[in-house]
Length: 250
Length: 374
Ligand SMILES: Nc1ncnc2c1ncn2[C@@H]1O[C@H](COP(=O)(O)OP(=O)(O)OP(=O)(O)O)[C@@H](O)[C@H]1O
Ligand SMILES: [Mg+2]
Image (cartoon, rainbow over all chains, first blue to last red; front, side):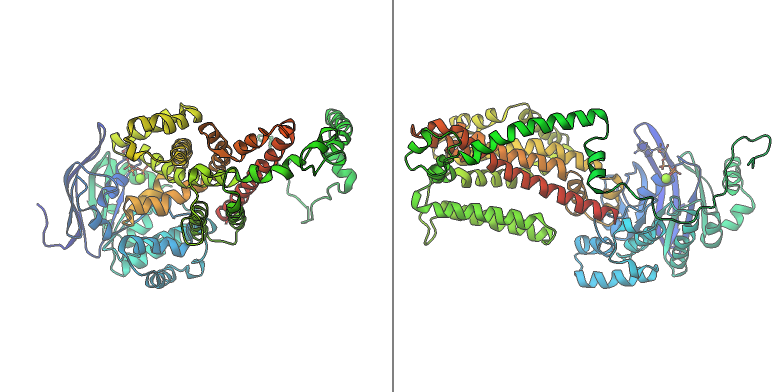
């Protein structure tokens, strides 16, 4: 059952998670192969955030196994430092540090968590900001940037540790429509560059172009999983059809 | 005019206005008076009543405090038949009031302490020093003050803490209270939010008990009861005991303020820091506390000002801060009739310091607000 030959960067096997008595993740198994992009979609409250947050230990799972880049993440929190060292995360609400300049937002982690020299971290940060198209904003504070710019800073910040996998939790959901594309463009470039990505998103155009696999979740369980072409052509379940009907008519 | 259809009664009309500067505000002295003092009939009445009271009082106050005042009276006799204030009590007794029982020949050291404190306060008030520089500056100032007061290094005669008094003592207690109390407050606030139930319970216990006691009671416990339970060899000096009491009292109050600041930091901030691989202490120090403390500068400063005023309570333990020393100075029968003038002087002294603190707080607040807005 467990595939061992596919070079999986993220691997979840029969994962279960409860909030009190509420069963939030039910027997979730999925793998993200190196260099591939997996998109997760599903109705609100279906457990998408819970799942992605379990992958880097922001939430603890109670059942099953999670492995990230070869490190097992225990349900007791063991291995969490190692896992976080190899993952970058981007949040819906950016979560930039408002009291630090853009440049300091990027270098904080490398300097204080990885012990990198400040000048080296600064050089890498500028290069990454250039890559996401905002090198000229390095000295500003997050509050002075547009939402799209902030999210691109957040992506650059997550890339600073040269992660093996990037986790995105609805990265464009709190952006104005005209800002969504600039963030998606950065993500597409990342995918094209061979980054492994796990993305919670409802951007169907992005999923169609970029994702290798679409995972549809509902009520804490994986309901369907298929490559986008197949997924959009023929959904097997009534739940997925209903969901697609809703988001496609947005 | 009717741009809507028959079914819709709402409407909007396309404007034709060009971009113009705002209409002129009423300016000049008359405009200001009208707007600020006579806006309504009630305003006008209040203004007139206050003006009358000031007109009646001001000449009397001026005569008492300046025109009929005695500034110089070596033995106090010149004051006896003066109609005005006897400021001579301060000219005569200022050494005792300002420095208490500190050895007379060494009082220049106390003066230097006051000077250092005021200079550092002024240096911290503006935007010209980075936060880190300020912190180191204060640490160095505190150390210098301690060395100056204690002596015992080459060139400085040792002076026991039982001889300390006046304004330098007030400053020493104040700096000690804030320097020890702030870290305690932060630790208590963090413990109160800890995931460990024991730590949480301990913090809640300390905070609630101390906040339920008057400062005097805390000082008595620290100073009188504490020694009963500690072996004689470990008995520490009176000033240090008072200081410990002040620190705990300050810490318990400020902890609740800091906790409010911690709660104002979005959960996403901690998560983002954790996702970057920062452990509990680095993320608390670098991400959470800077934001938490920035939001509570005004109330924290209120506690700092209160700590300055609370130094007067140590008089109860036989330590002569500037107020205590003034009381001692007034024990002199030649001057005891002029307590009002002496206390007025102390009043002004406290007012100047506390106003300086609150101006400082306002400046910090403005600076933080500007940064937040970008
Ligand atoms: N900390 C928590 N405590 C209790 N219940 C929670 C907690 N976090 C999430 N839940 C519940 O778990 C379920 C899944 O939440 P989750 O945030 O993973 O959903 P989601 O798919 O990300 O939804 P959305 O699209 O709205 O972001 C929801 O019913 C939610 O109410
Ligand atoms: Mg979510």
